[in-house]
Image (tube, rainbow, N blue to C red; front, side):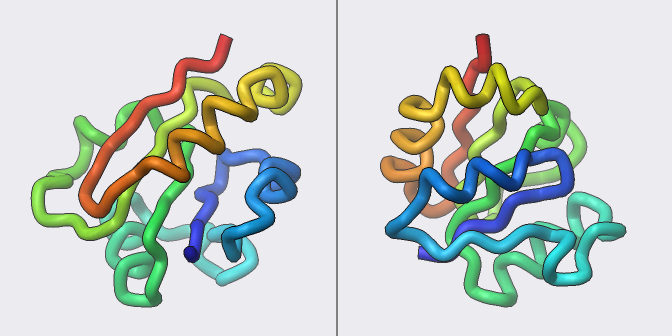
Length: 106
């Protein structure tokens, strides 16, 4: 499956998804895209999942007709995210099209 990390998602997290192909918005030249543009580009380019740290995404965008599954991390802190790897991987692995999940990072 194809996973897209937005700008705030720590890149080392990709190492915990060996069964998925992970790309970053930066690598694809999408770093300056606004949320709606990023979601559209991701869907149009075959991404099934977006992992983001934008906790306001659901309030800023109409997600009703989106095909992509969205997993939101409540922190950008890599040390804190590392402590929650299992929950993050599980959220991605169980996500379904048009789903929205928030992973609380302690």
